Length: 338
Image 1 (cartoon, rainbow, N blue to C red):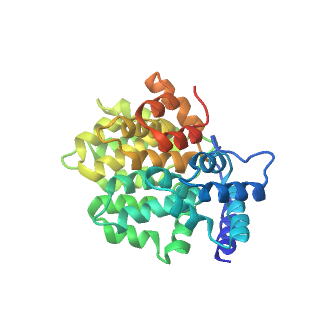
Image 2 (image 1 turned 45 degrees about the vertical axis):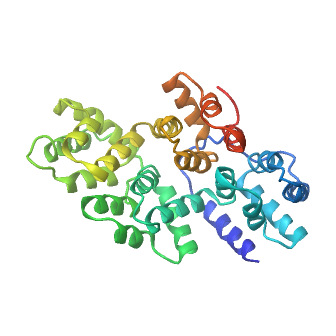
Image 3 (image 1 turned 135 degrees about the horizontal axis):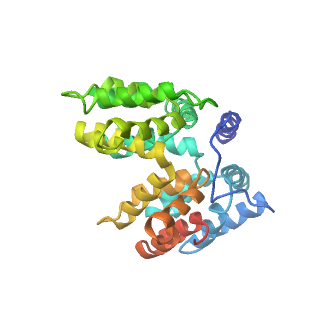
């Protein structure tokens, strides 16, 4: 079965070392019975008009590994692929969320990147979010999965679809050359890098983008946090303000995203969710992408940052700005009010 080999491949990936702590809202279900879940999903799909509530209740309250087990049992029972059956039964935004949950986090991320570069024209907004907000560990997994899923190299595809300094920055990130955190705080190096960022930008005419790229893609994140603080000793503007003065377009968005993620990644996602729900013609794609891709990673922490920043919970904001089955599935992934 293709499903089995895909699942085993994913298991081997998940054994890799992960240094970032997890703050998921979706966790493994305690008294898990995949046979029973598969039977309930079969009934829900066959029900006249489809029982979306049952599908949501089961698939948003199981871990990715458990969802795959349900899919195995379903396939054995029904002699039909569960993902194909769900595709036929669901539609619209609910379908996007549920099919997204049937991929692992790195498979979902890889498919979002693929969609952003292989569609009609490049969807730079998605590409920037996906590449600039992911850690080196996440990007390494995405690269491996991307190759397995599309028989293509992520670097090559990004390179073929972007240009100029924007391309150089994305490629440097995809090459995952970032140093790991050090137990020793190197004050001299912090000062050198802060000075180099200033000298490469505000201090001269034109911007030495190559210096910005090398510092921001090769230094550890704790080191960069200290560098940005020290930068304020040299510059009248903070790092984000300096970027906005020095560069424009996709390059500006990419550098700003990087700095926001270095300073507080979960706040970055919280503000993307807030903008996605409150913008005219709510950007469902952005909201779906973040809720699906972060629910088993750090959505609990995103919820905390959301409440802190906007004085209103993510749960409440979803309830106000979405409706129907889409609202139900998002609230279930959100897993509680703050």
